[in-house]
Amino acid sequence: MKIGVFGSEYQVEKHHLIKRLFEKLSLMEVEIFIDAGFYRFLAGTLNHRPPVKGLIEGDKFDLDIALSVGGDGTFLRTAARVNKQNIPILGINTGRLGFLADIGANELEDTLDEIFKNYYKTEERSLLRLHTAERLFSGYNYALNEVAILKRDTSSMITLHVSLGDDYLASYLADGLIIATPTGSTAYSLSVNGPIIVPQSNSLVISPVAPHSLNVRPLVIPDTSIITLTVESRNEYFLVALDGRSEVFPAGAKLTISKADYTAKVIKRYGQTFYQTLREKLMWSADIRAK
Image (cartoon, rainbow, N blue to C red; front, side, top):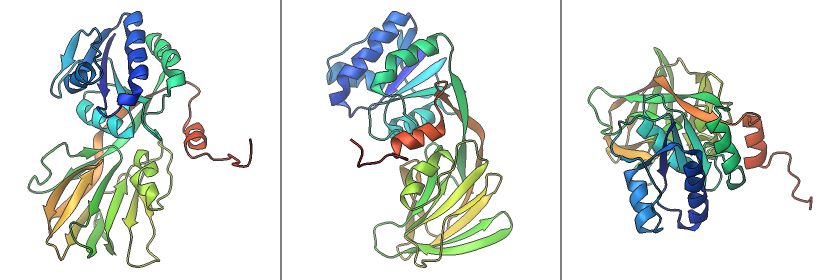
């Protein structure tokens, strides 16, 4: 089995967990490949040089499973590296909340044992694709969580003219607009009062950021919708962020956002459900008075 390890370079305090991970992988006798940047961090900052089969450079690699060691941001970067290579990803949480990176320290060894025995399930998560007539977004133009269109540099709001297919939807006067997948419904969209959508739903959600009108609310739409929008801005520019990777666009540019033609594969343990994650991460049903 070929296992690739991708990680965050901001987790010095988690070095004990990282060492446990590589000790367990070594005992499993798998072929270990490590992202080159993460390996330099391990060797230089943590003075830890795990035995590896090779280093992962670039965005083309042959793996059976990718391990993302960090928080949800690390998972999103790992998914971008995996791209369309159909490699399932396991998120090992060394961050904070962790909806995607949801394997905690107390589950590490048991989870890896189950993976070695091929005892796990894989969930397919939809992504969004950003398209413009001229390539304005220079990097990876897909998003697992959301595409966010935001004002830039000034306090003035922007106006976003949005259509769904051939149907005009609305012109949003706001600080921005978030188009999120079900996976992203618990991320940026949730912070602006967007709804939580279960991962298996064939839906997208459009959530305005600080809209001028209080009666403007998030909208759930079918994921077959083709979303087109243009932006008016006094600043003449605005930001477009795909899973936090942002670039500057000129006002007037036409954006087309649609469901991607491939999915991300996310590894989950048997018995691990989205509803369980909601209870644990958002403390649903928890009574803070209980001791």
